Length: 346
Image (spheres, rainbow, N blue to C red):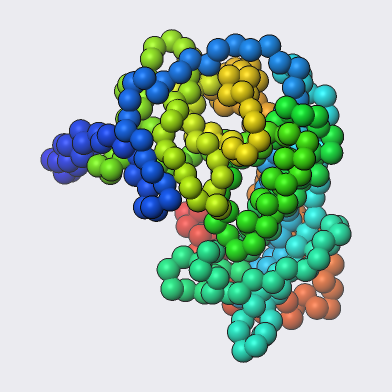
């Protein structure tokens, strides 16, 4: 065993030596710029009265069968000014996703409860959602609904903001799912009207160099010491579904964490002012270098397993005489859960 582990470590070490000189993008609309130490910039402290809105969402599946999924979706936002919270709100609703036959195709139809929203339909073989050749899992539609609702919430929040204020979403600003471009377009249109800065911070990313190495560790080896910084430019993007400037940022000089940060580039902004606001919000020792506003949003939007299990019991109890009928649908796909619970008891 020791010999196998040693060989694995040796192979891993060899692969990590190939650093690379560019970020790799498999799309001709992304033109990578050679990695250069001169592209590191210190985040210079700038005094600002601008507000920032942190938005995140969570969802959990309450009931699932092969032909339906009931999910709870929760969205949370908070508004900060001068690094103090001045407002916050949590919104939650249920979405019931059913399979229907439409023009000889299996389609997923959504119905909302607790939210005034028109029904949305998804082709069960939508190439922007599915993985591989298989039909989309009906469960994955809940994640799409959560994302769309986060973007809708961001658009609505603009009414409470003034020019130069910031909206920060968890994730990125690329339209990659069918109809997502429409939600981003509505958000951007309203942001342009009021000069609101739209941005997103990714907790994780899968950026690589052309040698196959991970980009973030490569940049970390080159980073300037003892300062919060941003790296720019990284890439020139001419993709209409991804209208952003892309930065790599380290928001606290003592942090071990580095993130990808995007800003919608059709609204004018001052990067030092934007990143100063984020830097001042990124000093919580629980996750040093990550904005506390997003930590808070994640905490209050997240649906805990215990809450999910309680809601499942509640719904099954309320089903009454229909409970056995529904159970037949649930039992058709829950064998894996039973095996998991048996393993846990051991």
